[in-house]
Amino acid sequence: MSQPASSAETTYAASSASGLPATLGGPSELPPREQLFGWGRALGGTAHVARPSVREGVYEAIALARRHGLRLGVRGAGQSYGDAALSTGNLCLDVSRLRRVLDWDPEGGRIRVEPGVTIRELWQYVIEDGWWPTGDRAPRSASLGGCASANIHGKNAWKKGPIGEHIEEIEVLFPNGIVRRIDPLGDPDLFRAMIGSFGLLGIVLSVTLRLTKVHSGLLDVEALSARNLDEMLDVFLGRLDVADYLVGWVDCFAQGGSLGRGLVHQARYLQPGEDHEPHRTLRRSAQELPDTLFGLLPKSQAWLFMRALFHRPGMRAVNFAKYLLGRREMGSRYREPHAQFAFLLDFFPGWQRAYGRGGMIQYQSFVPAESAAAVFRQQIRLAQDRKLTPFLGVLKRHRTDRFCITHGVEGYSLALEFPVHAERRADLWALARDFDQLVIGSGGRFYLAKDATLSRESWAPYLGEEDVQRVLAFKRQLDPEGLLETDLHRRLFQSR
Image (tube, rainbow, N blue to C red; front, side):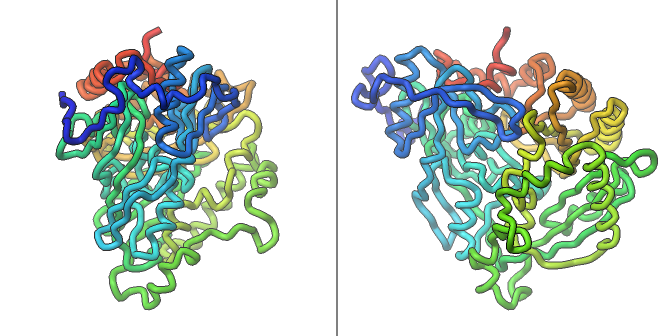
């Protein structure tokens, strides 16, 4: 296990009992409690919320939690679907106001930002210099600190891996008052443990990213249809060597020989010279999604009208219509701005609210390629049999990675999106437990940024892995009092 490297760390207090200077302790009064939700709005809780605008406020939050005997959970933009950014009954450190760009190299595509900078703010800052974020699938409002903590992936995950593979350095404040800059060469063990640890070990103060050079603001996109799940997997397999992005939409209402039918969108970067107007397409304004529908209805209010369709008959009709329209576009090619392709679901801001008061969950499982078709078919059939058909299914391709808490497999993921109704909540969680056994039996994995349903019993096989135990050993070393804790950590990492 790596030991602290003096050249890469700063100690803010050596003699203070809290590990922090008393002058940074701030007022003893706790901030008021607030109701917080995961992005899917199916899980929530109240917590005292601190929102510092400078890093000294982060030190103050640690001291404040200690004085009041509270645990401290870190929250970025609150885009995790479940409880990864919730700290019910404790102190929530919301870093969304820490959103400055600290350093930018437009020649080399290297940028250093505070943790609250969002994906949207990142691409807006770099696009006119000809750069684009490499792991861009997260909602555009996700924070870079949260993306590093969750090790997010994109529609190019089989080719580029998760965002952690494009992070050159993270600056972390540990509960003992030490700030360290950690990189994959100088401190590989701790770097592998920090990325994807969901704030279990320390608080991210800055992220240094390596971006992707682009020669146009447009992508070359091809639309393909698949009559069933096997055909969709074949489409993916045939395009892995030529595509830069691949994503599949699955109609989960289709049955029989059409089970798993849907659409695949392949995209590739334009090469130098293919775009005759890069000076125009690389403008920030050319990437922005419109704020209104038909020039009239503000899209921020569109979710209110979408509610009329968010029930089983409505979504069955929507999925059927989408598939038919997709069949008509089979083989069509067109050019689309990066932001419109990457953030399609953000076309309707706040669309998750259309699910109503109960919210929604997304169950995303990662399964080795040789088992993917069988497992995903079983999941869809189980959901249909129990009249809990997912409203949305999204298929992606992945590869393994070197991080300790990882969802990466050499295979595929299927994200299934479910409404949560009070009268069927227990049934939905029981369905998820049955899904868990299918995934575990196939040698698959889970993605904690999306998770709302995993139990410690389902998570137990991963707790026993050497890499996960390495993370927990760092936890004992760097946070021996267990100050950093979220609802996700309590649910999966603490014994009852």
